[in-house]
Image (cartoon, protein in one colour):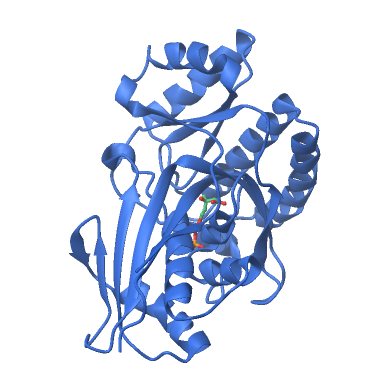
Length: 325
Ligand code: DP6
């Protein structure tokens, strides 16, 4: 017996209010709610077929066979839910420029959740899909939706999932990813956030102040107040990186060029251009701006970086099924 072969596409997302720390490591329940923007340019396509002729799960990424342990653990959740106890073949392709280093677990697990659950015959609604994707990687629960998305932290498996905030924003927002180093990150987000929760004396202040930042950024987005939104996003990112600097032992994701990028953005702001930076668990810097300022900002950044290092995206859609055969 073979199931239908199902392909799903999910786009990556960048958090404006960061998720950094778990309450439950196994179920991936976060300490704080977060808010992200799904991007149009970076996505993962994943095909899943369950097949009794296989002896174990197979996983290939960008045409190369890979270790399937993490994918298998995730498929086990789908097998439990559906009662379909068969191995699967999983084929994933990351549509992210290969040098970008932005390939993210968010688009990967969102696409896998949709493709695997559909192939297994489960008809999950978006809340259930978000909860399932969350079990693969926390940030993946937000990639089920397009546009601005809030992950409401909840307190258990049932109550922790993402919700669309504004799925198709009408204002002209752009995100420039400055690719500084495409190599695999030195400290995974999974380890980094766990270490911070355990050792940073500032962690309680992060949780408390992030709830306020989230309420304020939601107001700013509803009012289409770009300056307020960007200021809060930059603040959330820097607070997250300050947690890493305050951990014991401390660590950080900054490289000299990350600081150079941040200074270029600050200089642009001093010259009257509204743009703000954010950074995740790696050295690449992402700049949030409005379409009207894009060319001016790119011209300035090209004084510091090569054109291929600058990747522009706009708000993107939620996860979708691509084909059924
Ligand atoms: C800095 O979702 O990759 O990008 O849940 O352990 O898989 P796990 O972590 P992950 O962490 C993302 C952290 C972040 C901030 C964010 O996306 O909110």
